[in-house]
Amino acid sequence: MKIVLLTPELFRAEGGIARIMRLYLKALCELCGADGRVSSLALNDADDPVPLLNRYSNDRLAGHFGADRHKLRFVWRAIRLARDADWLVCGHLGQLIAARLARTANPTLRYALVAHGIEVWRPFTLLERWALRGADRILCISEYTRRQLLRFCPGVDPTRLLIVPNTLDPNLAQSTAIAASVTPTILSVGRLVHADAYKGFDTLIEAMPGVLKVIPDAQLRIVGTGDDQPRLQALAGQLGVSANIVFAGRVSDEELAAEYARCTVFALPSRREGFGLVYLEAMIRGKSCLGARAGGTLEVVSPDTGVLVDYGNVPEIAIGLIQLLRHPCDSEVVRRQAESFAFPQFTRHLAQALNL
Image (cartoon, rainbow, N blue to C red; front, side, top):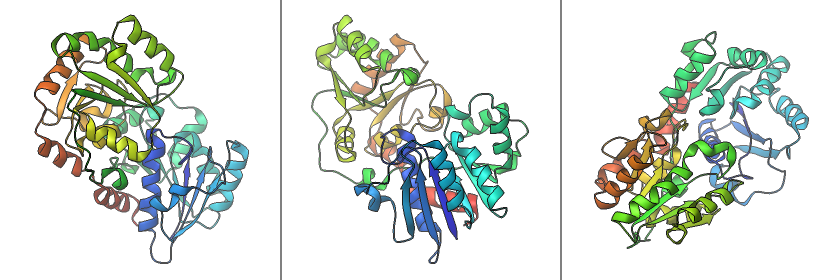
């Protein structure tokens, strides 16, 4: 079995899509068979050697290639790599047209799209509809994402839309000896960019005055960077809570694992999460989560594992954080919920979806 994986990026960025697509690479390398080969092509990556590549592949990886942000080079390479492939797995809707074009050069090629969330929660262009309707499989990370895609592209065959939930990175899920902080700590993780303002980092900051009235030593730690960080820092200053908020910046996988281990609760009151991988990354450490009643979050966070609030409702967010800081959910129950999304289960779901 020869498989080609197309992604926006695998190693140049640290967003959720890059992290989950690394796990697709790892799973495909395990599933392609003893004589199989997997080729990886990332639009934004360069061709430089990648130290992390060995974590997410094995000897069945034929190569990881980058187009260094050149779209025409990416399409040309995708067509060349797929000319004798059996499957092409496309990691983002924006690259699905390249997959459909690759089939013109290889009529026996089957291709699949990984539908992550907001990129398919909208009307599609004519070219996108053409590419979607040609897909042999559309792998939706949540039932909510599946419903939204069917809503905006009613002509697509619903039997081709299968649920393959996201999974935990086995490297990140490994246990650590780091103890939880004695300071009541709220952790949030994500890109701090204007385009992702829906994630609700500003509402967490706005909730901190209410939290501090009840728990004066509480701390909010925000991991991530981006062009929205100056606005968020200014907001913290305006509210007088800068001393209780730490912007930790971009961190390595090991440092992120330590952040999860040290925190008391995890919070991301986002309006548009397709799944919410970061909740799982916190839950595998036994950490209670706060999320919004929106998108795919409801399929991950339950009353047994955290608190759900209305998006943008700052008083409700403050009350939920206080509740979890004072009375967190049973850590073993939380951990078991996360384990139901472990990598072996993900690999099995993917194998069934692609008939590997």
